[in-house]
Length: 498
Ligand SMILES: *[C@@H]1O[C@H](CO)[C@@H](O)[C@H](O)[C@H]1NC(C)=O
Ligand SMILES: *[C@@H]1O[C@H](CO)[C@@H](O)[C@H](O)[C@H]1NC(C)=O
Ligand SMILES: *[C@@H]1O[C@H](CO)[C@@H](O)[C@H](O)[C@H]1NC(C)=O
Ligand SMILES: *[C@@H]1O[C@H](CO)[C@@H](O)[C@H](O)[C@H]1NC(C)=O
Image 1 (spheres, helix red, strand yellow):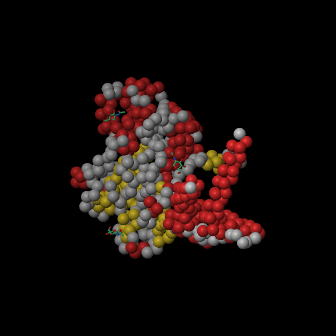
Image 2 (cartoon, rainbow, N blue to C red):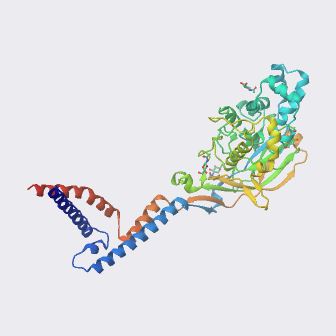
């Protein structure tokens, strides 16, 4: 028993010795500076220790600075630069959303009543109810009528809150321009025009019900039809010679305006925003019953080539529209993200969401009954719109919304607004004319200044500076402790057996 333990001990000692010899041999051969002095024979222990300390300090700084480079790569690798050669680029005009304040199509409503045998005495109240529901947003939920006949009518027609938006859609129709044949008879179509061109226009689902947006770069997934029914809208006028998706103009163009019209003589509310954005319900241009001209200033933010693939979303801290991680919306913009944040806040507070949010998700959220709209949502109106609360000390308590900016965007400002005299009769109804008086002479460009290649060079440079370390050194380490070790073991086994 004792003899066996001694042999194990000597064996162990032998193996340890072999390992140390092997590692020492590596230190002596290695290309890393200073390593050989640590084990070199003929030097005093003090010298060995001095070299070891130096080596450890160098390694520490190497790792420290390497980590700083990694941090820079992940958090500060992009910047926004300024571009000034304005002779060579085209500026995209801002986009506009208009909400008509008379919502339902009376013909469609009458047809619906006929089809569902609604008694005439109920029709009036029902119309008032649907019209106000369609016109509702965070500021005017209290206008929705609340009387007993409504409940009876809704029961009879079997309209539950999750059907509100479908029904509003069915009773509104979509008068925006879609078909080739519409181009021949523009009179009662909602469209926008610039010179002899027609600009694509679409109906959208916004926090202010069904509205119309023109001159937009957003995907066709952001349309009322797609958000409510999940279908792509018809768009026959796309790509025709006489139509444009967006109006662009160069510094030398004289005609930089477009006219958004087709709203009959109904009052309208307009919202100005960039062509990569959507409206915000609390930033309107004001109600109007007249045709207006609005002069705007705009500065674009673009991205350099390869920006999207060159950095991840977290690195660039901005999203492209197709990089949506939202639950209710298939398209990303900052304002849509804020809408979803608001939606979640409403859901948390009132346990349901208003009907004007798309709800085509796996577990649809409960849609608010009109009574809850009149109570819970009216009570918290300010918080829901502004997304902050003022506490007892007068401090703003922001609702946490983590919304990245849009990578491509524009900063749009209204300069002035004035009424156009007597044009309603001329163009057949209310219209808004948008003009850029001075085209921008600079624009912003998102750039990558610290790419993955830069990271490699930086880490490699640091390792070289402090340790004289290179890629080949790394290969050497790996080689030494795999292939070399294997051969060493085979050889030593072989000699032992002899
Ligand atoms: C600007 O627009 C004009 C016509 O709309 C077009 O011919 C030109 O190629 C555009 N320039 C750039 C840089 O896109
Ligand atoms: C729709 O709401 C706005 C206020 O948000 C109001 O001024 C307008 O009169 C309403 N329209 C109708 C038809 O009630
Ligand atoms: C709206 O119209 C569609 C198609 O015509 C129909 O299937 C749907 O039931 C209607 N919705 C309501 C709430 O009436
Ligand atoms: C979307 O991404 C942002 C930032 O990456 C994150 O804060 C947010 O929680 C994400 N939203 C959802 C709904 O996953």
